Image (tube, rainbow, N blue to C red; front, side, top):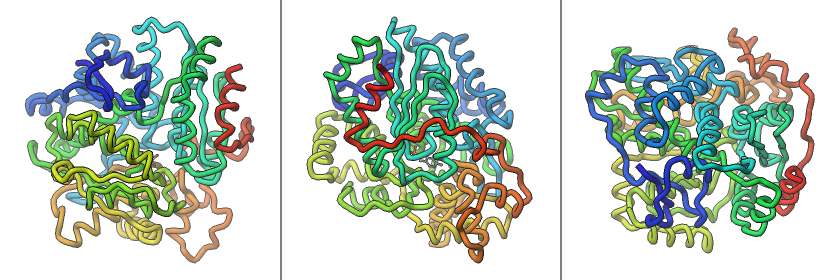
Length: 492
Ligand SMILES: *Cc1c(COP(=O)(O)O)cnc(C)c1O
């Protein structure tokens, strides 16, 4: 199993190189040359395994250069006592046909931990395999959750440095506090004046700057990515789709072999793309519902075949989904078209005109596996209250977006079968908006995680406790044009 860029299928590289580099030189994303299959018999066996064993059964197919012991070590280091439940990613069933796949039991209380607890281990081993002597500098643009999860994963990992840029006005107070109080000698955090796309574009420009790379090389550094464009991020996410399927079988919610629908709150298209890989590998998935907030560029794309970012950008109550350019879509376009020049032409058009339209064969293939919808903030808040009042299950704002869209589709008579909602954050991470959703009569100013805990009788997860009391280490914000200088200063 080798890898190549979505923009050039001729240059094959090993898995550890794809993980080490993050983004291809031609600015494409690395993809596996083919998608391996898991047989129904193997899937049946996975149902009696624990999460770590399921992770091994999935990930081994993609990492031929990692031997069994090595990969099992990586997995046990990634998914142990750093998660607050031994099941790592449990499914909580709300009724006979609806479950929440809870991906927020890790150290930062959001789904990014699943990948970012594994990536430092995958990456440091990849560097050894590639005989890389320089220090890797992880450069991250974050819409909120990736930043903290990456900091938590890489803090004080030998041979690495990590730099995180977040949109100054586009993350929640909790998210910001989590990042700017991060400990570790090898970490740097800065705000960017602008939105997530500004931060992400700034990071992409730094990656594309060959002269700067040369300069860093002289200083003994090279840049890599922990954004979900890195294959090492995507791969660990495929696992939980298999795991949720097995858990649904084990709980008697579906019969083995039945298909499941997954509703996925989507931003950069990484989480849901992992589900698509799972489906291609043979997991019985009926549809993947691509769920957006008011920033519904993906909804329009899946409905029309035109991806168009010439539109207003909204700051919503689900900030990790406030994205106009969903980078991982490029991987899907490659796998479906199998044509790097076609992918390049779409991405060129996106760069030049901010829009592209795919051929109708491509759109047909996409809608075979995906459906899409979006929810407004008002609908999302109403859902949080409705679900809490009906079943005492507390959803965060991102999860509630997906629940809302699934409900709308069920009400319309679609997807009456079993479905899993991918639950991407602890409600306590977005407590102010969750609290005002539950109690619209309260003034929203200064509602805290403790208020939510008191109101619901649930306890605040340990990583989110006493954030206000921690020492602030990073106060700086920079213009997008100043990002490169900030990197250069940190790596002086
Ligand atoms: C990152 C994130 C998402 C979106 O995931 P993508 O892989 O970017 O599509 C949704 N919800 C939360 C809480 C997140 O942190």
